[in-house]
Image 1 (spheres, rainbow, N blue to C red):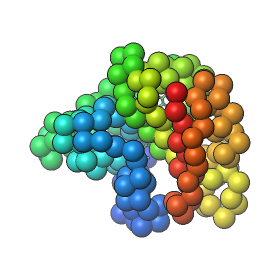
Image 2: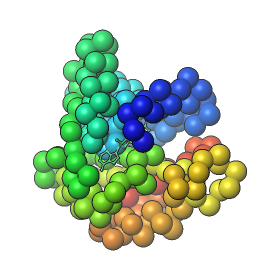
Image 3: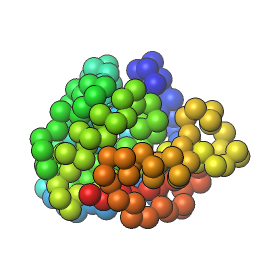
Image 4: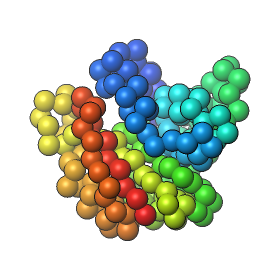
Length: 185
Ligand SMILES: C[S@@+](CC[C@H](N)C(=O)[O-])C[C@H]1O[C@@H](n2cnc3c(N)ncnc32)[C@H](O)[C@@H]1O
């Protein structure tokens, strides 16, 4: 999604339609977690997640500088100092080796042009006990009103994560439209 879609990410009905509040509540966070939001967009998730990390940080990674500019402006406006914008590239997230407790990716993995390279870089950045939460619109469910191109099935996700050496832990379907899939190193 181009940065001109920023308004869509921030649409007021999103919380109610997608229950983004539940998504955030169920992320495995500790007060001091180092968390990477890959494909962070406008920071729709990064800011509420950062509020739950009084001693932690959200590394907000995106490949579009325009999105990171939105995040920086919002940090200033809100007086937030634990959301760090990071310019990634299509093959990597520019994160230090074994530095991250949790990676979450919301509606972004399916957009990666180089998923294998991105996947390897993400695994390298995870601490040995780190986890990755992958959120994607359910590809198996025709009633989810999103183009098939922007959805993923569980089988697809599990196969792609297995290819980068991640172990499937669980899939939870408490969200109305998306899979909430947890993987570990
Ligand atoms: C549909 S938006 C989702 C944004 C945010 N996760 C949300 O749910 O509000 C997808 C984002 O992924 C970013 N993106 C695409 N490929 C990427 C990559 N390889 N690394 C980091 N970000 C990427 C895009 O620039 C875009 O901002």
